[in-house]
Length: 99
Image (tube, rainbow, N blue to C red):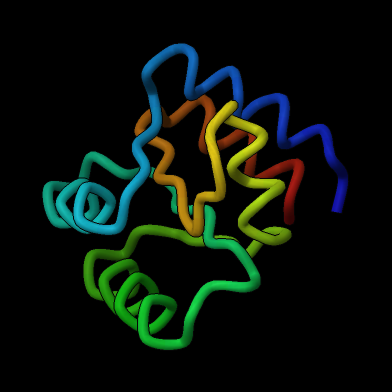
């Protein structure tokens, strides 16, 4: 994977176009605010299942990325297991970089 996507994630966070935290992300998925969910590869199986099932139910794309420390450092926070992108433009750019 190219690490250019980390710059886009950080930019989206500074623009307030992403959310973190399992409950917040699930609410954003339910309300169709989330356009893309980035899930860390070292997430627990129960949390992975919860997030991927929600994404599949509400037809929100998700992509598995590196570990939680890299995802957290991209947004300038401690470890994060998932980040929801709330802007279509950022989500489209991330999909082209990651897929």
